[in-house]
Amino acid sequence: MTEPKVWVFFYGSYMNFDVLKDVNLLPEQWEVARVNGYDITIQSRANMVRSDRACVYGILVAATHAELDRLYGHTESVLGETYLPEPVLAETLNGTWIPALCYIAPSMEVRVPANDYVERILKPAREFHFPEWYIERVESFRLGNER
Image 1 (cartoon, helix red, strand yellow):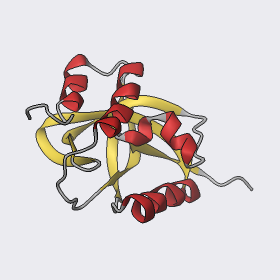
Image 2 (cartoon, rainbow, N blue to C red):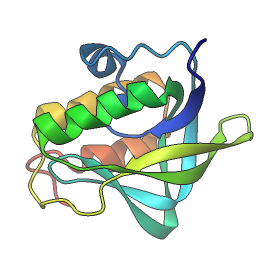
Image 3 (cartoon, one colour):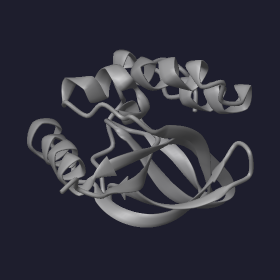
């Protein structure tokens, strides 16, 4: 029997298919979307924080729970960050609302992110044609940029 898949909203480097390939997660189904009520922050890694004035762009991916356990287990053991699943309501670019899991770190040590890490987020943001204001927001986290 095939394991069922759930929708998950990726907003950081996991929306980069090259990064997902490194952990053997190859999405067959995905869609560009945004989640309102949050803002993106990039400290050592990307995270979402609640905000009544912002939204976060990313992609919805259909994945199994085993794939998500492997992915976020890697995040914790190799990268040292713990992300926990939270339910969100994502809006696709055509206006469809899809309930999804979204992994958010409840706390994170504040550090300046490496520019190559920020670029792993910018690359798909440009490829998926995120709004220019959002790309500028992500670029603002590069080392040397004012925030």
